[in-house]
Image (cartoon, rainbow, N blue to C red; front, side):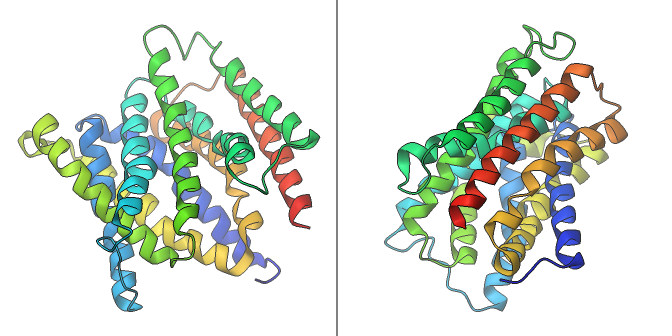
Length: 295
C-alpha cells in the first residue's frame, strides 16, 4: 500500500460516481424490464469484464470446484437477492432514496460483524455512529412526500437488499484465501445460473420490446457498476487499503441524490437532506472507530 495521491482520490471519486449512477439507471431500466430480468442482465454483463481479466491473467475460475456450494450461496445472497430487491424497490421509490437506504451497508455490517466476527466488536464511538445513522433512516421514512403506504414496503425491501450485501460479505470470509478475481468471477457465474430459470419462466424478457434508454441502462448496469467498478475497487484496495476505499460510503448517497436530480428531476426535500447528513455522520464515526482499531 502507499500514501494516497491525487490520482488515488480521483479513482475513488470515479468509483463513487459509478456506484451512485447505478440507482438512477436501475430506475430507467424498470421502465421496460422486471426486477428478475434486471438482476439477470446485471450479473450476465457484469461477468464479462471480470472473466476476461481472469483469462488475461491466467487466473483459474473455481466455480465448479469442491467449494462450489460457497460460490453458489454467496452468488445468491450477495448478487441475486440484492439486485432483485433493489430493482423491485426502485420501481416504486425515487432512486435518490435508494442511494441513501443502501448507504446503510457500513452500519449494518458493523452490527452483524459484532456478532459474527472476532475483531469487529462494538465500542462507544461505533455505537454512537450506528444510532445517528439509523436515526437518519427512520427520519427519512417519516417523509410522507416520498414514502407513503403505497411504497413503504418497497423502501423496506431496499434496506433488506443492503443487508444481503453485508451477509454475503461475511460469508465471503469463508473463502477469503482465494484470489478476489476468482471469487468474483465464480459468484457471478453462479448468480447467472441461478437466475436463468427464474428469468425464463417468470418474466420472459425476449417478449419485451424495451425502450432504448432502458436497454442502454441495463447494459450499463452490468458492464460498469457491476463489472468494471469491481475491477476499479480491487485496484484501490490493492494500492491504498480498505480504510481508504471505504470512503466511498460517504460519497455514494451524496452523488446518488445529485444524479437523481440531474437525470430524473427527482424531488429533494428537507427531510432527505437531513437524513443524508445523519447517515454520513453515522458512517464517519463508524469508520473513525475502525481506523483507530487498525492503528
